Image (cartoon, rainbow, N blue to C red; front, top):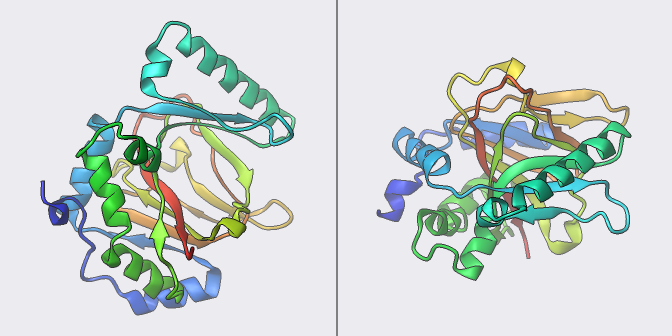
Length: 248
């Protein structure tokens, strides 16, 4: 599959208007960011061609580091029990007001570096996220010409998944902007959760982005945000490619 057929920026984006919105708020949702054909192709890759593992964290104190498992590890004897135990610990931490999260993931950058699927579509996706076309879009919207590279992972928020409030404070590592390339179902309902919410110092939600098919969320870090809880009755389908765009 040719790279341009897998990922192609929509040529009709109003970059000037998007840059103005970003300058005013420090965040923006770019709808219809890719051409319809390539967005549908990526949606299919995430839905049918991704070996989803799990990522979990229960608290952010000493010894409470994030944990992750590949699909093969979950499917191995005792794997599912380990993941469920970690998820229960995350729920308990969140119930106390501590930081926690639980969601399915496929770490694209790690997979490429470790050769999980040489020549596979995720490798091409990471290549394009680091291409001049995508980085130029981010530079045009943010006004930051020094952006040089991006990392990425695929994420899937299924029922009972969530990402607790945090700020992405790793700016010393060169993180400048967080991005979320959404490929949720076209009919994603507000009652199904999975919103990217931005919060003020009092914990009030000042803006929330609904999961939308073919939409790019872009925002400066550090900033307080969360992904809202996906309830048990929600369907599968809140898929995305997420990561950070860096200037070093």
